[in-house]
Amino acid sequence: MSGATKNKGKSKRKKDIIHGRVKELRTSSNVKLTQEEFAWEIGCSTNTISRIEQRKISLTSDIALKIAEKFDVSLDWLFMLTDDDNDFYAPKKRKKLQDVLNYISESDNDSHSKTPKIIYTPRE
Image (cartoon, rainbow, N blue to C red):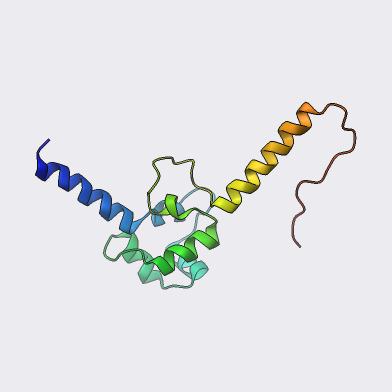
């Protein structure tokens, strides 16, 4: 592979990182929002979301943080800094999921426990 070809690959990856996975998130099965709805959720204009998705402007840190917080995704996933598509959840949510899995595993191993424990109480 020539140096020019190698640099083009790095350049494309850099552009992908700058634009992130906004459209992928917005159109995903668990979000399914129009550009207008998505923009309203994070407090920016529809035009901004459209231009980010069209790769005309870069994803700013301010918008990225709002997206990560509102949709509970990790910045690593949003900015394509991880190759693992399963690394979608933000660290806090991933920790909660791991705690639940650990509790279930411990419960399975503890056959003497007869009183169920509450592991999650939804907010009202």
